[in-house]
Image (cartoon, rainbow, N blue to C red; front, side, top):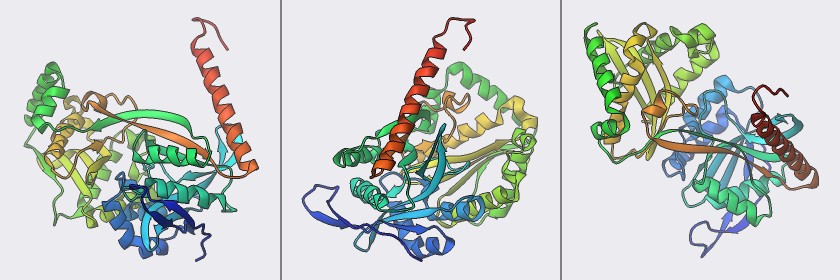
Length: 397
């Protein structure tokens, strides 16, 4: 398997007192064999990453590649000598908004909720410098680099801005969204009382009591030794019975997405990353949460509930049980992975995480022109949206 490389010599992203031979930045066609070859050092990288990201760990990428890949994917690898200090799956996309240009983007899919690369803590600038200059020399890499869903002002975003400025390249935030985050030093009970209004807590207590009248109500978590296949069956059945099943967006709607889900959870379990919380009635789940635990963080991946019991708000009740994550010493936060302004979780979790999409031009006149054109059209579209929003009531475009 061949890879184009670009070796560079840079200052360390630590105290800057030593020079580091970072590189080569290698871009390999992403294949199962490559993931297997890197699995040990890739998994080790995940344990000391600058920003934890379950969706960039090898078990999740492998499941995604096997079942959901639709275009050729390359894996960018950055090393300092023999040590792997960063990885990022990349694809070439066609069409940026309404601009018919080709560009490089971090690979994501519909079930992938965070775009940060896995980068060793303290090596963020080394990684971005090696990646950008490496892509400059890649003939397959057109236009510009578009990075989706980085934590705004997080270590990786800040390092990218610093390296781009050093290389005399503009960075541009193309989109920004904010979603619910759970992060607190409070106990689960104290957080619940602080975050949820007294009237709402009283209502949820009433609903829980009413639900308990329907049968034996209990909460249970996936435990070592449990049959994961049965837990997967229960979740898929629960999700498929609701609105996602009716709209055809449930995980069991296609062979590919169901296989992806099962394989991703199997990989997460093998790495000690899996948590499943179930609210059960007479031993049958009526609400379930699937979380990925990536200390010091975690991600809420999927949720489902039985709509026959919707009047009791089982999805909210299972989120109340999920607050037990606050008792873990190894987990400081949980990303909801929910849409912006989500009506349920935004009223339950009080902290927020802002994600941005960032573009950076690659070297070369044609590449810079394509980035300039994409940015200008974005700016014009933003102005047009602003003007439309300011039209008097009744005025049409």
